[in-house]
Image (cartoon, rainbow, N blue to C red; front, side, top):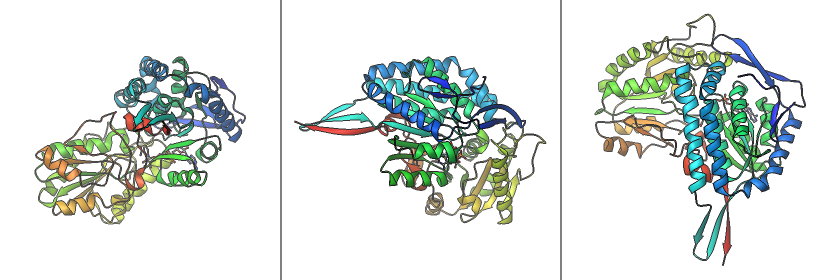
Length: 462
Ligand code: NAD
């Protein structure tokens, strides 16, 4: 796509008040592919004012009409699916096939699910002598990361639109072109001017100005726990609603009765996909001591298959960070069985698929989110030990359990402190609530649970 040199505010592309720009770099070859505006506080203010002005009419629009706009948005995304995949590949670096199958296809499914939910959700209910109204929260500030650039946007914008909220989006610095494509799709879908606004810019400048703007009613943030903590504190001080989707360090628990080869194969694929830049990735594999050596051998073989298939990391800083964790793993005594800190290519921010064995729960690589293609394999003695290790981090975003039968895996999953668990390789469900326990976040996205985040209730007593 051709980058816009403006911001999408009040239904049109407008020049930014500043001349500052962000360079967009292709992480596979380190070439600059575009420039977009780095908005400042006056631009953010203009966008919030537009969203505020559009709120009363959009909030009063019948849900069936909002559903029709969302269906048109889904169709606009479908019409542009190849362009979306190519754009994500250009600015994030993920292999084109993955961009098509995941980065383009999942947001289309999510947009479709909210077209359906807007049409069918009960925005009113009777409770005894009361009528309870589910009304839009108001103006939403959506701040998103780069790792699933379109999905993270749609997971906020689609339910907000369905609820009757208006939106200002501040996407990640590394992936603004996908956000511009989304704004074009919103425009084509006939969403009224001011209902959706896009400001590209730096987190500590545009992001912070947006999160702290008094004209915003709800801040919905996806990103790192460090920034989430700041946003949560500012929102608390202003008594503003806040939703936080943060980091993870999820466990893939392989119980002794499991099909080991399948569990290890799927587990390695899960960690290596999107170059490990998935907040819900199962980066800790827990294996019973009797099957440990076999699992390590299987993981080494599985990881080797990704050596020439994996995309780069998103930027040089992320590569430095991931290599630092690999070096730390070696220094703390973990056994490197695949990959390592050396660069596999001269150009591009690549890191080899890396597997560590003999990882103990206290090691840094078993506790901190790495956000790269790095798997840690830990040994457990019995189920209680496995549960202690699985639950033994500050995070609780996702996880997996494998066992000979689903009931055994489910019994274990019920004891895990985490927001979602895949049982024996259960498929992603775009209608199931997604979000974290503990420091992985506050609130839920997707499906009906995601919609209610954008609603507030009013009770009328008769
Ligand atoms: P980040 O926190 O640095 O940035 C996320 C967004 O916040 C970006 O748009 C950025 O510009 C903005 N931002 C940065 N500083 C800000 C500030 N002071 N005020 C307001 N906005 C600010 O995170 P990242 O590096 O882009 O993404 C990686 C992190 O995101 C990982 O920790 C990952 O686990 C997490 N993540 C979580 C989920 C989830 O659903 N739980 C999904 C994807 C990514």
